[in-house]
Image (cartoon, rainbow, N blue to C red; front, top):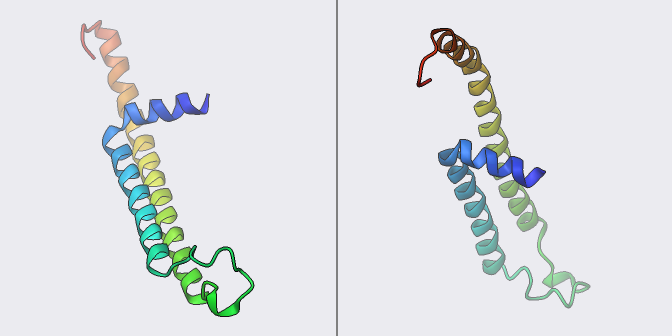
Amino acid sequence: MAVRNVLRSIAAHPGRSAQDAILALSGLAIVGLLSIEFDLFHFAHQPTEAERRVSLVEAIALTMLLGGCIVAFIHRRIRELHRDAESAPRLIARCASCASRRCATP
């Protein structure tokens, strides 16, 4: 059911869905590149050594980066919902006038 709704949303807004995909992939790429740069997983088998842990600054930076990507995604989706809600009355009026005239095309 949820997959069907996602597919409908993608079909209804292909450009915006592409932007979402690009935003998500860029966020993942940034996190991946930072993890490679700082060797976040190089010492994963030795988590008890203090000098080989991820520093607090690195963890905060990655968390803020991920949070920024999530906030940008949510903000854009909310803006899209408001834009759709504002255009809904015009679409309903246009469909009603078209139905009353029995137009062949909407």
